[in-house]
Image 1 (cartoon, rainbow, N blue to C red):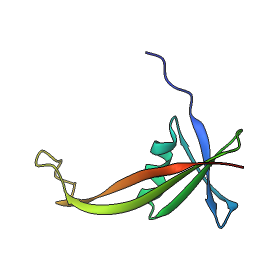
Image 2 (image 1 turned 60 degrees about the vertical axis):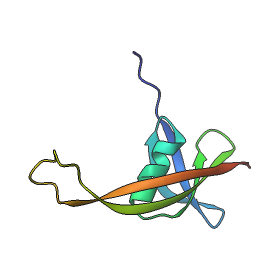
Image 3 (image 1 turned 60 degrees about the horizontal axis):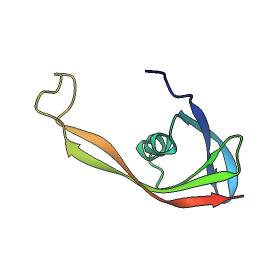
Length: 89
């Protein structure tokens, strides 16, 4: 099975690009990375295109699986995102 090519997604704030870039094959994966860092209003501009992927994100603290390694705490953070649309620049 061939690997998908990674794309770069630039985080936008107030309609401007930031220096924060997430790499993933899909925009949802990049949005999960952003949500895990604490961003809630996630706007990711796909480099090389004029598309901006818009997500709502949050972090939830959930209980870890029972078959977890000993070093993993009982509560872990889980990122959740929901795509609200695509904008074109």
